[in-house]
Length: 92
Image 1 (cartoon, helix red, strand yellow):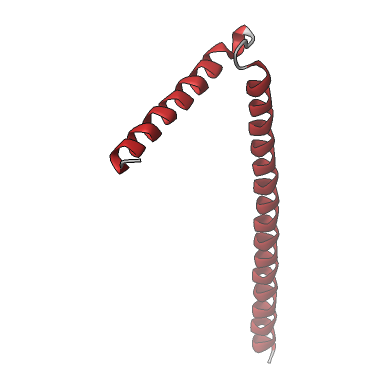
Image 2 (cartoon, rainbow, N blue to C red; image 1 turned 45 degrees about the vertical axis):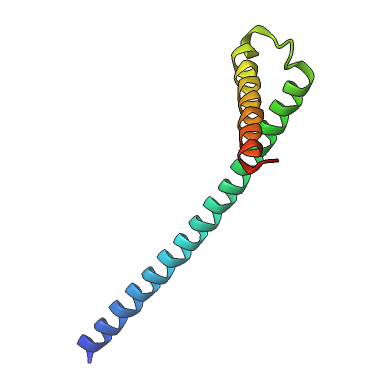
């Protein structure tokens, strides 16, 4: 009987270890999800700050923002040109 008791104890111990590991993995997944949510919020707020800055200072940006503002203006102008070409193709 001692042999079977040890096997039962080993199985019980291993089962608890697996269960604990599964709980840890679930908690880690949850925490990583929370990190991702925070990172997405930060990204969204950075974009909002950048848009506010561009709206206020895009035509006369500080030197360190000149390239970025110029790129935005060029992209906006390209969008207008492409949209005009689409309207032309559609006959609008």
